Length: 114
Image (tube, rainbow, N blue to C red):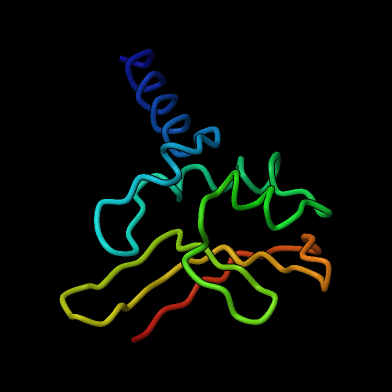
């Protein structure tokens, strides 16, 4: 019984994080809803988003951003509409570019409406 519980815990642990994969990153099931991005986010940030990458390198790896405001790209990570037409929760990856279109930094922005 103890081995079974340990196995379940290990499966749960490894299913929470997944290595970045461009094809799975781009998979979309609905407008703005990408089911694989949440589980790849940690690996993406730790191993693939490096300062100094160009806009072209970022879009080659991550595809077209979901939006761009000034010098900031954003990619939808998670979006929840609850039971309404307007979103009630969101998580976005923001990637900051300098005047030469090179990455200067990034952050994960999470918001929630009550």
